[in-house]
Length: 166
Image 1 (cartoon, rainbow, N blue to C red):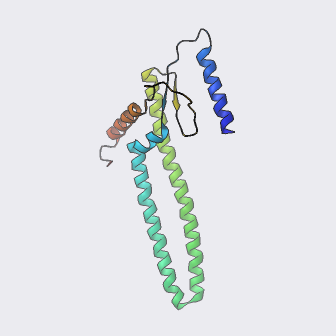
Image 2: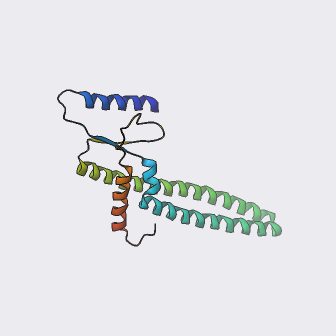
Image 3: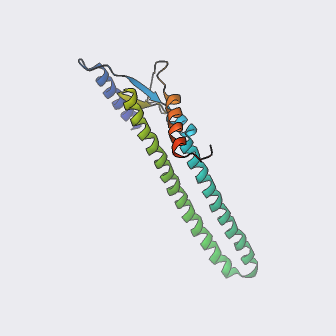
């Protein structure tokens, strides 16, 4: 199904590029994986998520230790704590997934807003994303603007978050 959408997107782009009477189309691309790895905002969000995950793990470890101590004294209490631990782990797993999704969406929204501004400033008709799934089959040398976008995106982030550690 993904391949079908890639083919449709490529054909649509080809039609736009080859329609007679259309003005010149200036197409570039970015590497989203490289952006997410190098963007200071994404790095900060991953660090925040890591800290939260460690705290959740410490809390789960604390409950597990408490469970082991209760097991020595009372089997009934042990069963109750096992249930509590299971519910807690399920809850933090769900919370972790939601938090990760929320943080990722926030970072992607920042990147997309910047790319929109960047594209307008540079006069690009399209900015395509090059991923492992092969959205771009060929790109002329010099059309990868990832480094320029990453530099501008990080500069914007650093101006907005002057105290953030990288």
